Length: 513
Image (cartoon, rainbow, N blue to C red; front, side, top):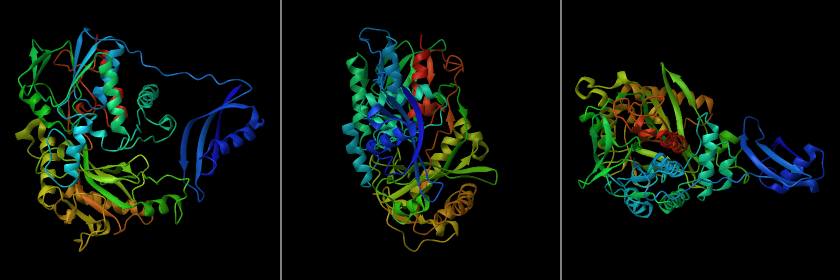
């Protein structure tokens, strides 16, 4: 027999099968020896009460052997098969390639950045405050922005079957099994690069091809149909279709499409700062304790409020993490967050963003649908001007920011290039800065102790999503103006994060032929 049950246990009893197996037997009123198999289907933390509980959803077998479905990809040799071009080797591009292989089509993946091992060296240079390589950084390169920026796998997508498939593919390529059951699954920036390399090898072993350091600079379009691409070396590559999966930071692609009079749309996005607290402080607030139990993970939080008609919210919260420099060009400051798999840093950071609407974009007459892109770029340059030399970020103590006070000193931070005291409350656009101040006041009431000068904010968190959308037909997923062009994932405005981008990559691949 088998049954799915739900248990609410102490962190210790939920930590080891030897404990929760006994609890499951008691719940089912059977002997523990009768249990032949037990799997965690879902695991989440309930910290709403004084004593934290772990909710486990378990599938239990007894008096029979468990039968478990084995996940497999239907891979085939696609050497010599019809070729489909994919621009971008982020999660959307890589998962689109896997799906094409299952369909018997050969993916040709073109990535402007470097493969993982070479990209690591460029990222190390960025972390030490040296110049940014515009084609190899935290956003560009094998695996896309997620490879070295955390590997959080949580998504609000309702396509749960698709999400489970993506998680199983990641597990198949080296991710821990708990990503299949955790409510907020996470791989970690220390583990994800190896998984990305394994996916690359799967694609290549089936006959697909991946070209690194190969920037796409033009499209071959004839009679409103895309025929192929042109690279920075002038090479022309032809394919039956093109999946455009370049990510939200590939500004040159938007500018190329704009110059070619290919339809684009402006869209709202969000912008703000990255806030960092001591992890112990967040633990004490969330778990109502002085010292976090060894059986509990570093605490996270999620905050949202409406401030004068606009959303102000936390996102990409990184418990036990680090703040990293995520600019893609010299003369910009962009910050982002990540966590290693163990989430064992003494800091907790999160993006805090304000909703930006299209009416906020200045110079719309001059830049048209790219006005939001220019607005985003100008704020990043403003942050650079108000920072220190190189990638030193402008920063302010949180309480000082809320009260419009320049910080005489700054607390320790995980941001390696360094920080300099700067009046973010003064130089940030008022419709962003004022809402952030009010939002932090509200968050301080929701989480007592959150609004403190022990916390630091760094500017700017500007790459939450793209201010530009590449439209596509709802049914075919093709661009309405260009046949066989499939705008995909974050860069096209249809996804946000590793999982939703991967799902969208598969959807686009599925629609071809």
